[in-house]
Image (cartoon, rainbow, N blue to C red; front, side, top):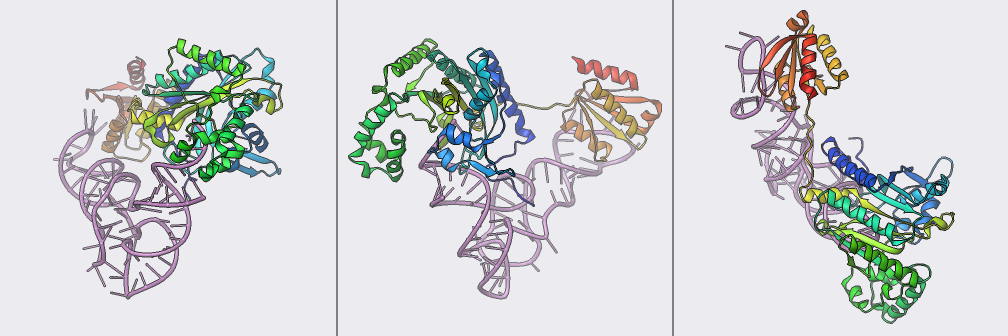
Length: 421
RNA sequence: GUGGCUGUGGUGAAGUGGUUAACACGGCGGAUUGUGGCUCCGUUAUUCGAGGGUUCGAACCCCUUCAGUCACCCCA
């Protein structure tokens, strides 16, 4: 073989595209219910957008981007996520000049140079939501409810919603310092990763999966205790709205998002049976991002759902719909004279909106019948040289086995009538 | 980026140094004249991920490499 698909990529074959369409359609339905409009941004952007938007010290930017120089000497990056691009589009197309808030969703491929693993690919697909300009907790609640409702509509059970507030530029630095003060004493006992996190992003230390680090940071101060009035009010408001809507959530003071732009609300929906990659949905508020990208100060909030992970979860729960592509009519031919005549019938059937097919491999009559059966054809139109000569078609009902010889026009009418129901 | 496991036909797999690489499913063809689903028969890998080495001899041993998979990490 010449070559294989690049590592971490997957072909979505006919046998599974149906599932993808099902998930995508469900996403679109929910979005329209909540009045979110679809947006499609390019798959690549100027590298700078992600450097500024996502944050230069994040893992995504430091080691996971597909970056290259194009023929015009521009640095280009395959999008590792879509929030920064949506914000860019919001500014570039002056969407902020329309009535606000801007409520958008997207579905499409993202690219991250990660080591492939269960539920993790280098090209993967996300369904995401972004709401710009609204700053109260109501929009946070709406978005979280949208995510939950989407996953529930697919039938997923045992989802866990984790909630936290990561503060804002007013209160986070205060917390950061307090946390560093707390950790500084026995910093040398933490794992190497955590030691390097200490200076750059100490909040991640709380999220470390290393059990020793977990123990050491046991009594660490929590963000919740350091929130400024504004952040505290926002968080309380959100919790009230979610409770009012009967959405169950768990507070997780150690929940930290991996992208720098998050402020205030951070949330994650987990589906534990998935194993190591159990985060199905992650999102939060990013009130500083639009300004960071050169716009006027505009709040925003969004989430992304990993489609591959949703698919895995549905598979695990046997929640995938059965999809069979039934064929209405299979046209069978016998003899050379019959072929053009049969082909004409095939074309007419399709023109009138009936799904029809025929053999293109020069198979015997018997083999063509087998094929028709495998295609689950409701009817078979048999045309031999005799029928062709008399302008007739033998129409066979595959379920009952009955067949009758009809004029071409009558056969067409009958099939139209039968299939019309 | 680090580590564990794995790599035989379209698929699932047997085979762990000796001449023709089991088996099952699938694919294709057929079982008297122009008819499917069941059954039966035939056929379907000069070759065991790739490259190199050891040996009289390798799918089986060694090395390298690539890929898959799971975990760390990170995240959707």
